[in-house]
Length: 230
Image 1 (tube, rainbow, N blue to C red):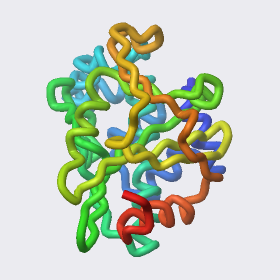
Image 2 (spheres, rainbow, N blue to C red):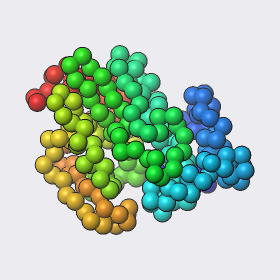
Image 3 (spheres, one colour):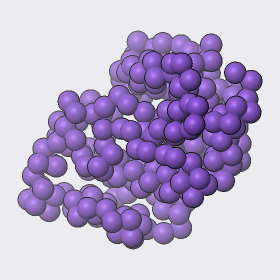
Image 4 (cartoon, one colour):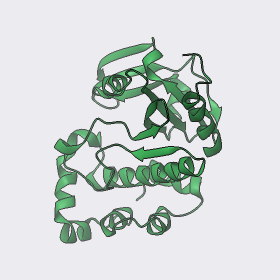
């Protein structure tokens, strides 16, 4: 059984996630997760399996293996994004606690942004968020659970900027949003899907772009080079 995220990314890459993971040198435990071999994971990587069991809050109703597969698939896309950012000449580093691509205990999950783009005068923190179901286009908003919005916003200080990079796989669009300038944020004490608090950001005034890695790089470089009205 493959999750919606798993299937969507296989269509995006036109290749199996297992093949891509092997090409990218992913660890054996991550390959086992993509193979959905729960018994082997539990037997050979008990620490990883126990870490999965601890992530009840993060799973949002998914099983341990569904959550793990979604996580590994999102890492693969993120690593492919980083590869393309570097090809364009950007100085990019992984920032989150899962930079080693290992399943962590719930208590070790970090609130750091996913990426840091380093420039000569400023750094840009980027949190990558994905929509695999068309939720953003239908509801004109993106939801960030718990205090993620506040953590991302707190990274913007001095010359440093903090952005959401939103990728809509259903409609093949993306947006790059300067989170410090947002005025349309609503706090929801109980989000019906997450079943936990969330911050909802109105997307009605955000510019969408046709998706390509090249266009993402161009938009990021605009901020590094000062081509926007700040």
